[in-house]
Length: 317
Length: 292
Image 1 (cartoon, rainbow over the protein chains, first blue to last red):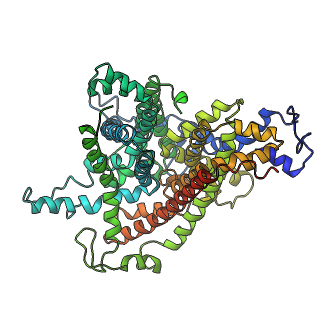
Image 2: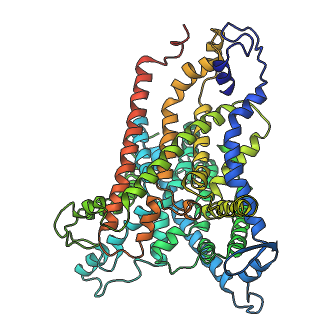
Image 3: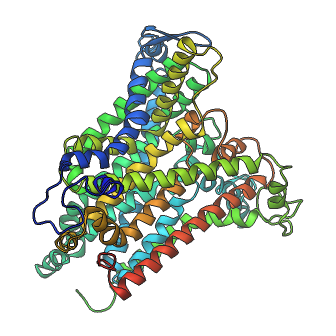
C-alpha cells in the first residue's frame, strides 16, 4: 500500500505508473514495500511488547529497597520469591502452594471450557445446516466477548450472593435452611466466572476446525457402518484436534496469568500466580514482581511448547 | 445422512440454549437491577423501578467521576480502533508476499496474544519507569512521567488488539481471489487504484469487523491497562475499583452504561457490515468503477 501512497504523492516517481504496464517496472522493490506495510505493526510490538518483555527479564535481576529500583545485579527477586522453599521441604512453600492452586484452577477451567466449547462448536458446525443460522448463532456466542469482562463478573453477584437468586430459590424450595456461603467469593465462583468469560476462546477455534472437516468423510464413516460414537472418536475428534489445541492454549494461558477474575470473584482472598505479581507491584517491589513474571512466563511457555508439539499452529491459522 | 433430525440434535440444541442462557442471563440480571428504585439493594427482588441510579451517575454525585473516565475511555478506544485498522490492513497486505522477518512479526503477534496480560503490562510500566529515570537523570530533573493514556496506555491496548486485527486479515486473504487484482492491473490500474477500488471494497465488511474488535477490546480492557495506564483511570478500571467497596446499585448502573456503549458500537458495526454485504451481493463488487 505504501508504494501506492508514494505514487499518489508524486506520480512519476515510479516509472510507468498511470499507464498500462506489461512488466512491473517499479523502483521500490517488493520487499521494501512489504517492510513499509508491516513495519509499523512490527514497531508497535517492538516498543510495547518485545522491549518490555526484555525489561521484565532484566529488572528481575536487579536489586531493590523500600521505594526504588537499584540497577545492579542481584538475585533477590528470586530468592525472596522462593524464600523458605528448601527449608520447608517436603512441605510446599507459599509460592509452590500458589502455583499448585493456580494449576488446579487452570485444569478445572480447561476441562469445563473444553467440554462446553466442544459441544457448542459441534452443534453449530454439524447440526445447524443453514449458513444464516450458523452465522446468527455464532454471533450470539461472540457478542458477550465484545462486552466488559468486569461487568460479566459483577453480574454473578445478584445471583450467587448471600441473598441472591440461587440462595433464596433454594431456601424457598426448602432444600437449605441457611444461605450457602460458598457460592460467591470462593473458588467455585472463580471457576464459574472464568468458564463464563472464556469458553468463547474454545468455541471459535474448535468451530473453525470442524467446519473445515469434509462432510463426505463423516458420510463415509456412516456408510462403512460406524456408529455415531465411533465417528465422533475416530473421525471428528482427530480432525478437530488443531482447534482443540489452540483453544486450550488460549484458555490455559489466560487462566495462568489471570488476576482480575480471581481477584474480583475470589473476594481478593485467593492466591494465584498473576495475583502475586500484582501484589508485588503494589508494594513497589518491581524486581520481585518481574522475577515472578519470568517464572510465570517460563511455566506458560513450557505448557504451550508441550501443546504445540501436538499441532503446527502456524499451519492452522 | 438420515431423514429428519436425529435425537442428538435436540439434546445438543438444548445444551446450546442452556449455554446461551448461561452467557446472557447474569448480564441481563444486572441491566434489570440497575433500574432499581432509590431504596433498592444489590439483589432481587426489585424495590420499585426507576432511573435513579443511572441519573445519579450522570449527575456526578455518585462514586466516580464518570464523565472524565468516560471521555478518556472513549478517546482511547477510538484511537486504538483507527490505529488497529490501519496497521492491520497494511500488515495483512504485506503478508500476502513473502518477506524477511515475516515469521518474527507473526510470532510476535501470537506471543503478544498469549503472554499473560499482567506480564506485558508490568513490562510496559518498567520500560516507562526506566525512560522516566533516564530523562530525570540526564535532561530534566523536574520531569514527571512519560506514562499516560496515549503513550503507555495506547501501546498496552495495541498489543492486545493488533493480533486480533492481523488474524482477521489472514482469514480475509485466505479466501480472497487474487485474480481480481490481476484483472485490475491488466486494465492499467496503479497499485493504489487496485487497492482503493478493488481490494478495499471487497474486504471492507471484515475491516469494519477489525474496527469493532479494536474499539470493544480497548473499551473493556483491564488487565493490560492495570499497570500501564499511568495516573488516570479508564472506565473499566474505575468499575473494578468499585467491586470491593460498593453496597448499592451504582455499580450496576455504571455497568449498564458501559454495556450500552458496547452494544451501540456492536449494533452499528454489524449493521454496516450487513448493509455492505447486501450491497455486494446485489450489485456485485464495484471493482473497476473507478478505473475508467
